Amino acid sequence: MSVLRPRPPTDPIEHQIPPGVLSADGAIDACWESWLARAEKVRGAVASASGTATEAMLRAYGTTGSQACRRDSALFGILDVARQLRESVDRVVVVGDRADRALVDLLLSTCCHPHHDDLPRHERGGRPRLWTLGPDDDDDDVQGILDCLVPRTGDRLLDAWGLVQVGPCREAFTQECVRLFAEGADPTVRHVAAPAMVVAAAVDRPSHIGVSVPAVASDASITPPLPQENDGVFTAASLLPAAIAGIDVVRLLEGAAAMARRFREAPAEANPVVSLAVVGHWLTAAADPRGGVPRRRLLPPPRWRGLVEWQAARITPPAPHSSPAIVEARFTTPITVAECRRAPFATIPRGSPGRTADRRGARQASPTAADRLLLPRCDEHTLGQLLEALRLAAAVEASLD
View (cartoon, rainbow, N blue to C red):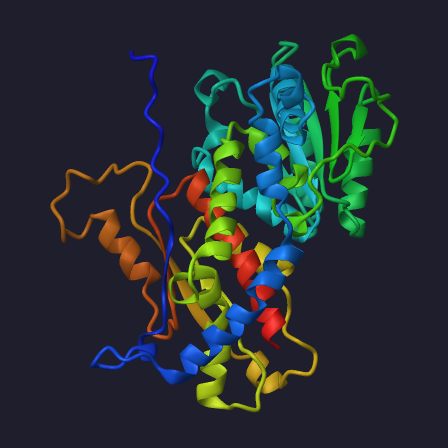
């Protein structure tokens, strides 16, 4: 095998504007151009307010002149804690509030093996199984995970488990879960606290607890320069569980940074963030100029449920003065993935009933779709672009109200 690994492609995602924007002769609707011009005026302010946490993380981590500089970066700290946890436990429980948990679920469902938890450890690349808990779960879910954490193998590593608290966990259910798993489940639990990140490892003996942050007491509250911008999208709360599962978080951040640069530099007519932001306003202007802005309903592939939940919980809600009758109306944005990671039906002739591409396209079709997002493939770089585009588009849309 060659030691030179080909770099995966980084094709940009594409946003297809509503079909009514272009007339039969190719002319662009004047109302659409007007909204693009308005979005162009607020783009600079939105870009400044959104910050550059993602690019700053990559710059600090990418320092090659001194290994010590890289070790001081926030991203290195996250990856190092993930590595320690992978090497010390075989099961990890992730607890978080609705939006934080949904984002973790999205990353796990799109970038991991679909049945990651069912594979033996050597086929998982030495990565732990991960189970997530949030406010939508109930007591049966919690007890089911507790049952799975009972030592069974007699192997020190395979019987060890850890707890990752993502985000602040302000809801009562998640607070009770953290308290139950961290304090009541095992007397050897040890916490390592950081903003947007709490890690605890439970093992058979205290001497084998291997998760720590250097030079910080286990019960201390620390405030290193971990990323706190971007509304919790690319912080330790999402990056740590992803790194534990073996997801390439560097490529995820690179995708987000690429979309942020595209938002700042691309002209409005070729800017997916700007066009995403003005669709709702353009639809409203055509239906009722006095109304509010209808809310977008994403229609992603079936396993991407976490994207819908994250968007509903995290994306900026409509302005309070908007008309409820218009605001409650939804317009649909399907998300189509052009290339699957694996193609078990690739040998089946195109157009046959068993071909997955045909079934997937039919399932994602929507007669009420206003616009469409086209993703070249399902990987970390593409997902980083998508999350950053949706986050920035929501900020631009809110600025236009």
